[in-house]
Image (tube, rainbow, N blue to C red; front, side):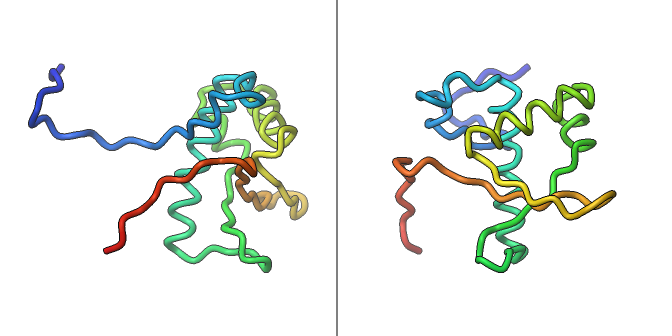
Length: 120
C-alpha cells in the first residue's frame, strides 16, 4: 500500500455526482448509485466517439450481463438495479428487440449543479 502524500500521483477514478447523496436519490441502493457512476463513465466515452441518438442525446449500451459482471450480482438483482435507475428517471431505456441491447440515455435532475470548466 502507498500512503497519499503531497506528490503521490492520483489513481484513475470515476466522478460520483453529489446529487446521488441528496433527496430523492439518497434512498437509491448502493448498487444503483454505483451503476449510475459506471454508466456516466461509459457516457463520456460514447460522447467522445460520437454515439448520439436522433434527438442528440448521448447513447450507451449496457447489457444486463455487463451489469452482472460489473456489480458481481445475479441476473435478477442486476435487472432490479437497472429498473431502480429507470424508475427514478436517472436513465431512459429504449428496448430494440430480442437479443439486442437496449439504448440507454442518462438523465440529470433539473436542479443539478455543474462543474465550471476552464476554457483552454
